[in-house]
Image (cartoon, helix red, strand yellow):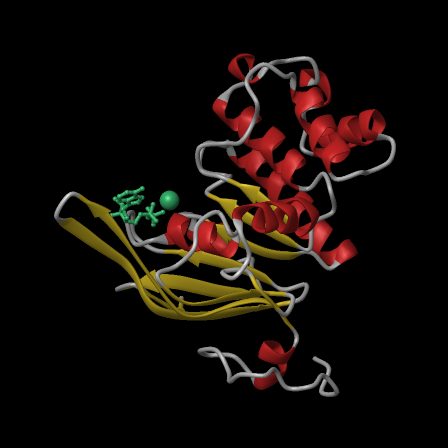
Amino acid sequence: MSSVMPHPRSGRSDGEPPAAAAASLVRVDGVSKAYRAGNVETRVLRDVRLALARGETASLTGVSGSGKSTLLSLLAGLMVPESGEVVFDGQDIVALDDVGRARLRAGHIGVVLQSGNLIPFLTAAENVEMAIKLGGGDRPGERARELLAEVGLADRLDHRPRRLSGGEAQRASVAMALANQPDLLLADEVTGELDSASAERVMATIFGASRDHGLTVLYVTHNDELAARAERRLRLVDGGVARA
Ligand code: ADP
Ligand code: MG
């Protein structure tokens, strides 16, 4: 870890050395989030503090309903917290409008949602190609094929999502999330539906991107063995992030 990095403007985050916080790519501080349905309020996150260093890989576990997907959505700027800061590369993303957050996401953040993110009327190759074109990348057709081959879908290029298995669709979603060489990948239970060989392949692609391009990764998993492969293991308990 570099010790020459300047200290960040504000404090530290739980359980991390100051150097990691100083080099953080993304951090949340004092973040709280509740959902309201009629009179019922479900408080999901309470005063959460978390920082991810550049190039770091972290896994996130926690029981169903503990708020893992909510935390990923906040980090992706897909929703904003009621209170607290979400800072990406020095920029307060809560202060941006929806267009600003969408732009930030398109340029810097790859997200694989639990529900998948493929457009149903485009083939696997067209989905990835579209993501590359939106990010202004070169050789979209060729790169889409390369990325899909990396996740083991070289022979599924022309399949639309409904003709992909759940696991294949998840792998195509990972290829799409990596299409624009993001700085941050947020992956929500992407290996949940995969057999172990496919899960290995997807994790190898993700860890390879971290090693080769300094991708910062936060992935949610229920598999302890996969969680243990991250440099840092986190767990959501009682609305807060703890070391797993
Ligand atoms: P996890 O991913 O850990 O299973 P989630 O972040 O999806 O947890 O959900 C945390 C809690 O918030 C759950 O109790 C869930 O039912 C509730 N929740 C999630 N999304 C919504 C929503 N849009 N409206 C109301 N409640 C929600
Ligand atoms: Mg979830």
